[in-house]
Figure (cartoon, rainbow, N blue to C red):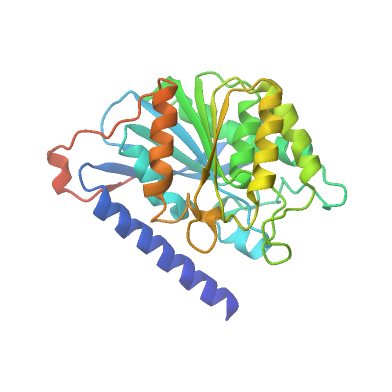
Length: 306
């Protein structure tokens, strides 16, 4: 019965996000495709959803990475549809958006490869390396698409997906122009300790490491009432990251809803985070403007893919 309730809730969320996208992005036609992306060693592939403007491009591209739920059951029901309305904001501004499901999540399935182990002695480097392997596969796949401008790539993610994006950026992928990290962190559990994650210092050491390697500008975006990572913790991680010489900007959004951790994935949160993204990308000379409406506006927003 619990699983049935969860599946019904997930379906309602996805339908709501699609309706939101259809209402707010009816000014143009977007193409929606489900794909499988092979990983370099060939032993497995990851499921992904692709949302892009209709047309030949070339367009910039964003690899948009999901977070990591606390429970295995929630990870099994993870879906790119939960970020569909978010992806539509980027696609309507001329970006191809690829939303990969890492190992252990949703349709990709398999082992949860990025588990860092016990909070008493976490191995975050091992976990992030596994996450980055999947993100990098999606990045290379996206960059090779014929309608993508490979010199205009962005890594973005929420929560654990934000850290995975940063760890991937530390590899120095070709064409990367920016990283958008929303509520980035690991180890949070509001049910046990609201706002204060476990193993703050071990993860700070990962931010030390990433700050020395990431060359693209980074936006750290948090909300004051984040129930996973409070402002003191997120500011610490940001400062440890920039201490290594990385270029980054920290934005602390006023309280959003009951838990600001979800500002990026909530369908009403864009009015708050989108202006911050627009300012950040403009400051770093990255094009990010709404596409001009066309006759295709009279058609449904999503054209079926394969």
